[in-house]
Image (tube, rainbow, N blue to C red; front, side, top):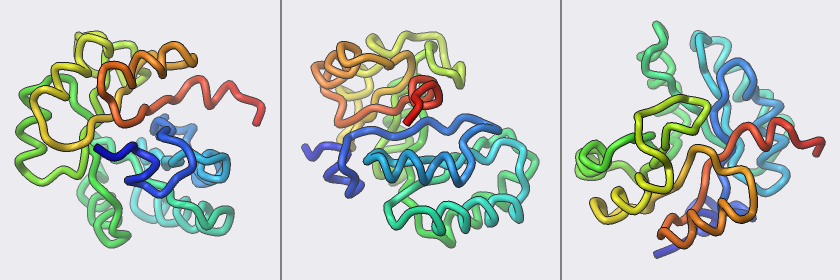
Length: 176
């Protein structure tokens, strides 16, 4: 199976987590320019704000970046329409293998197995327990997320079979 950077056309197999009210177009562009896939987090933004952030990211990078859709947003339908217009890949975040299987069957390009240590506070299972269960359940690439902030944790995610990782806080804390 391909690594995440081969799938996305990035230098590294890393996705910057979609941290609400932090992951702006500028932050996403900085992460993309550093070799990861930067993400714009929509949080409570409406469609107009998202378009502004997408345009800002496009001004600052010619590298790929993505958009994180928070389904609880009152603007979720509008945001989803804009994401579709931009033609981005769909990588849903899952906290259980049964959901991963359902979304893979519905056409997800990959799934992000996110454990409870993530800033998104998804599910109750730890990342290192969840990732192998999801990998065994689906035939699409699996990205590990939640509590991954060091080289050893990255190595562990790859040892479990993940094609890449998603991380947030450690990127936020980086001076680069």
